[in-house]
Amino acid sequence: MYKILLIDDETIIIEGLKKLVPWEEIECEVAGVAEDGLEGLELAQKLKPDIIISDIQMPRLSGLQMIKKLKEKSRYTKFIILTGYREFEYAREAITLGVTRFLLKPTNLEDIKNAILEAINVIDDERTKVKDIENLRKKLNKFNALNDNDNNNTDNEADKVTFLTGQAIKYIKDNYENKLDLQTVADHLYISSWYLCKILKKEVGNSFVELLNEVRIQEAKNLLTSTNYKVYEITEMVGYSDTPYFSKTFKKHVGITPNQYRNKNWNNKEAN
Image (cartoon, rainbow, N blue to C red):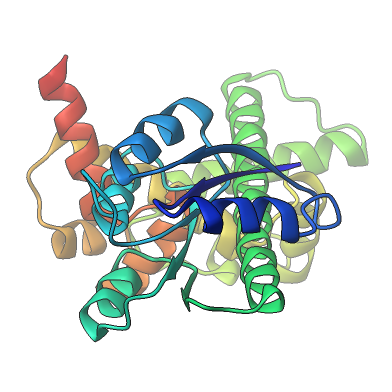
C-alpha cells in the first residue's frame, strides 16, 4: 500500500478526500493528516509518506515552503498540490520543485484519482530503476572479487564466460575516462562484439553502455566529494563529452544532480 499524507487547513477538504477517494481500489492508505505546513513537515518526516497532497496557503508554513524543506531530506516522496489560488507564480514554483500535479479547487474526484495514479507510476518507475542499479552494483562487486582471484579456471564454457566478463569489467574500470565502445573492449579480449554483448547480458544482466555508465558514475561520485573540480571538468575526467548528458545520466543513477550530490555530501562531512 502507498502511504498518503493529506495537508489542508480546511477540515471539509480533508474529510472529503478521506471519504470520497477510493483509496483501497488504488492500493493507497491515508497514513496521516495535518492542518498546516509545519505540522505537515513534522508528520512527513515521521511517517515518510509516498505521496503528499497539500494546499498552498496555510498557517505557519505554506505548502510550497514545506515541500522545499522536504525535498532537501528525501527525493522519493511525490507531491500533489490542491489549491484555490490560481496565481501563475505558485504554479511556476511548484513546477520548479518537481510537483507531480497542480490541481485547482474545486476539482472533480476523477482528476484527483488520476493525479494520484500518475504519482504512483513515477514512484514505481523510480523504484524499478533503483533496483536495477543495485543489482548491477552487486554483480560488479561479484566480478571484482572474481578478478582479484588469480586462480580462475577456464577449462569449461561457464568458467570462460565468467573470466571474460570479469576481464571486460576490469578493462572498463581501467579505461572508463577514454572514448570506449563495445568493439574496443571486445578487441582487447580477442572476441567478437556480439559475443561480448551476449555474455555481459547473461552474466551481469545489463548492456555494455549501462555497465560503462555505472563505472563512470561511481568515479564521478568520488571526484565530486573528494575534489574541487567543477562539474564540466569531472564530465571530461570520467569519459563524457557532454555535460548535460552526464548530468542526466548521473541523476538517473543517483536520483539527484551532480551539484546536489556534492552539496549534500559536503554538508554531511561538515556536520561530522
